Image (cartoon, rainbow, N blue to C red; front, side, top):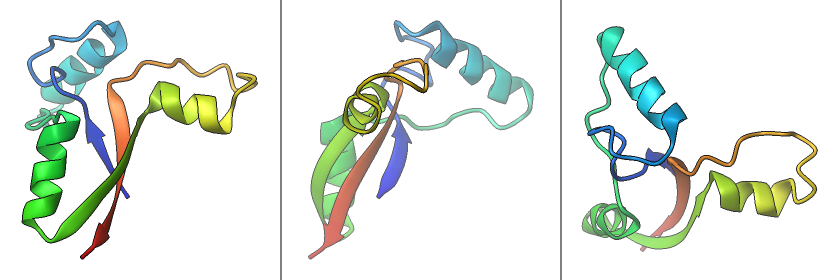
Length: 88
């Protein structure tokens, strides 16, 4: 399992105000985000390192799977995601 930032966050080009706000915040603290990924690009990195890519889920997908009734009340901003992979 790996978590990653979705494409567009580093350049502050997302529809999610929270993503843009957090990107500015971490940059002000001296640790700016330096990489973000599309699913395809992350799969290429994983494959290049000997992994077989699996499923990708953004926050909305995780909430649908693990909190379908939205009892947590968490925002479904999809700028963060997780991916599974296995070593070949």
